[in-house]
Amino acid sequence: NSHTIFVDGMAVANLKALEPGAEVSIANFTPYARKIELGTMKMRLPGHVYEVTERIVKRRFGNLASIKFTYRGIVGGAIAQGKAHGNSDLRYPALIIRER
Image (cartoon, rainbow, N blue to C red; front, side, top):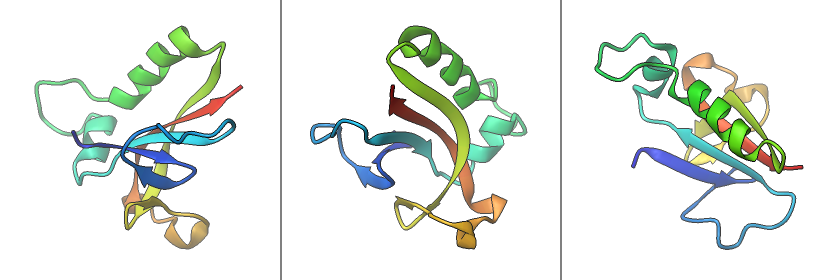
């Protein structure tokens, strides 16, 4: 429930209005998301959730879409653009999906 879907940088509730060529991002911008991804949070689940997910999704859909794990700045419920929000503390794990 902590993951948000973005289409072309804007948060959306679903993909019903997805246009061809749009960039879809899935991100978790809860305060602990970076710690989980980096594996520095003590918990039962292993870290690197988005990295593992990238490999799984690529195996299944890599012939249809470009799938990339990265960190994205998220401010006010939208993907931050430009270097103004380049502070790594504001960047959260994300999967970027683009149609091939």
